[in-house]
Length: 233
Image (cartoon, rainbow, N blue to C red; front, side, top):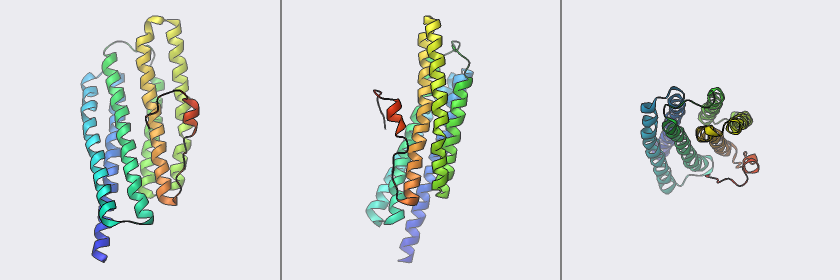
């Protein structure tokens, strides 16, 4: 029985390590997607899109490992919560990779055309999103629900930056209708960055669930702010 439990916990640890590896790739993809946008590095943008397939494959690998543990080990209590949470966390990380790839695709659409506004606010959004995400990984590794809740609180900053970018770009389009297409691309970049914060909030919800058994919607304000939009959760 001891050997079986040791094997189980080894596989559980492997599951956690694989999640952290996905997180590292996602963080890199966000950084590279923004760098491709701001430096007009279309080769890098294409690489981000290609690398997203690796993140997708790793997500499904984590799911398969989790389902195998559920089927063969019949875990209970915290172990069960950790496995179930891993599936959700992997899914949210994979979606974050999609958002990074989306930014890279927009960089390709913009091409070498000048940006209609300096990218400073977008870079600040990216920095805030990446800080939240890295701290969520720290909370996951430590099993720290307090840190996870503090990460969720930081999403307000990202939402505020998002609204500022929207207002500025709308002003640009009103002042010069010829910028509508280019400004719309940047609006979608901002949308992808804002969604990174929502995905991180989802991850933090699962971290808290593993630690406490409490599963709550910590991002209820999203529906209120985005009424009428298409939800992809």
